[in-house]
Length: 147
Image (cartoon, rainbow, N blue to C red; front, side, top):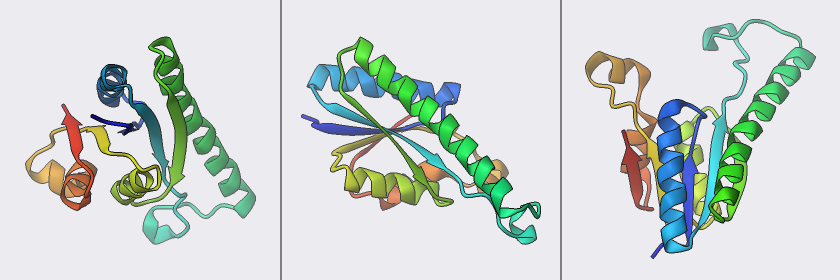
C-alpha cells in the first residue's frame, strides 16, 4: 500500500502520537519512514523579533537548534529500529514549515504524510496559524492528521 511515509515531528508529546502511528502503519505495510523536523531560521531583523547578535552567535544558536532537531529525528529512528522499520532521519531549515514538509515529501518520494494537529479554533488558530491546514490544502500527497 505505502512504500515511503513522511512523519513530521517537532518532538512534542502530540507529535509523538503521529510518530507512533506512522511507525505502526509502516510496520504493517512494510513501508520506509522519513522522519522530518523543520528548523526555523534565526530572525535577522528587529521587525522579525530577532535580537541584534553577532553572526557567530547566530551560527551557534542555529547549530544548537540543528543538534536538537537531530536528537528528535534520531529518536524516531531508534524507535523504528525496535520495530524493525527502516527510518531515514532528516531535518530542513525553513521558516515556512508547511512548505518544507511538502517539499521534503516530494524530494523523498513519499506517498503519505503523517502529522499531528493541535486542533486550535477561532482566534488562536488565526493568530498562530495552522501548518497542518496548509499541508492539507497544498499537498498533492495524501495527509493523515492525528489529534
